[in-house]
Image 1 (cartoon, rainbow, N blue to C red):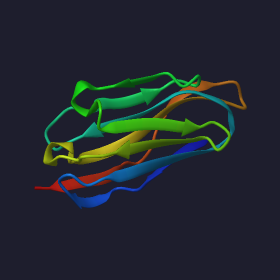
Image 2: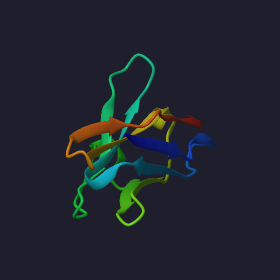
Image 3: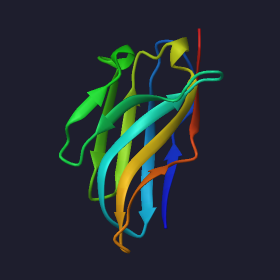
Image 4: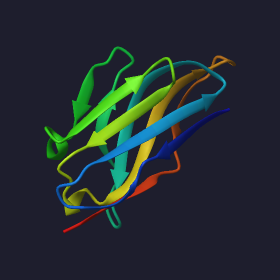
Length: 120
């Protein structure tokens, strides 16, 4: 079994920064792409940023230049540095990872989510 646990959410004012962290643990052989998604009330979940196991990154247009995704493969962690936050960034942020476990199964996992609220 594999678990993803996010941390770092909170309430900030517009223009401030937050750093989200996600730790993967359990029966892990290797982790492929890792990403951050977000879902606001009444909206569909959307991909915010993604990083491959080789470090290639991809961002949704609305966060380019403000957010940075990174990962530490040795620690099985992924981070999302969010700068110049805007009220429209308010959402629950979810960590996601493609994991190969020790049973040989390749599965996609989600964290439980962490709330980010940006006040104007």
